[in-house]
Amino acid sequence: MKYFKSQMKQLVKENHELQKRLNELINEHELEKNLALKALYHSEVADGGKYQSAYQALDLPKG
Image 1: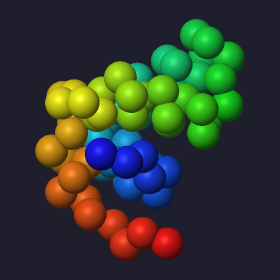
Image 2 (image 1 turned 90 degrees about the vertical axis):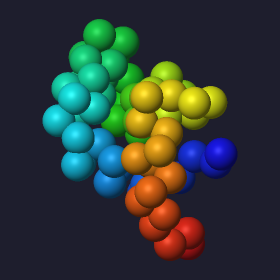
Image 3 (image 1 turned 180 degrees about the horizontal axis):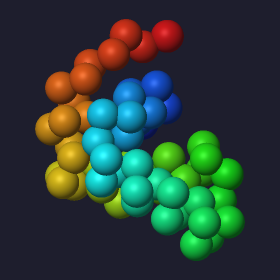
């Protein structure tokens, strides 16, 4: 599965728990939002993560 920033942003926007986790990553590790989004993707979505099916269901246009 491939990382798409637009898809990840949409998933976070629709999920309060992911919003909270994103803010924790940004604050705890002093990450920029884009890097924190990618880290969140790898920890919560990729490779059978908790939100993988929700991410795939978004199926936003790639481009």
